[in-house]
Length: 113
Image (tube, rainbow, N blue to C red):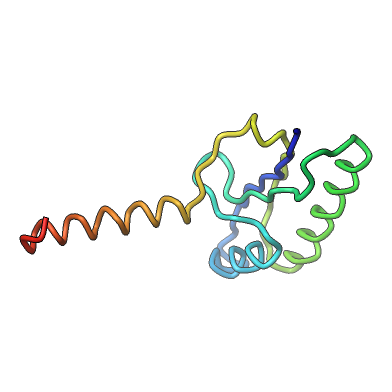
């Protein structure tokens, strides 16, 4: 099965929208924050996509990003690849790991470990 993801990298401008406002808007579109060369990733829902389906999906998400970020004074780039060809780590996963590690450290410091 071939799944695709569209990745977004955002360049901010000090006179434009805040990073948190941009992040909120992209999360509302279904993007997930990631660590890596790109800032956000959108996982396309279909497991199998032919070139016509993929083209339509890319145009749909591109138009949605454009409409959502209009007036925000940010630049962005898009890249769509097969999911198995990209390497990224969701920030949510990193945060959960850090929370778990912090809890383990607190337990050790409190003598519970």
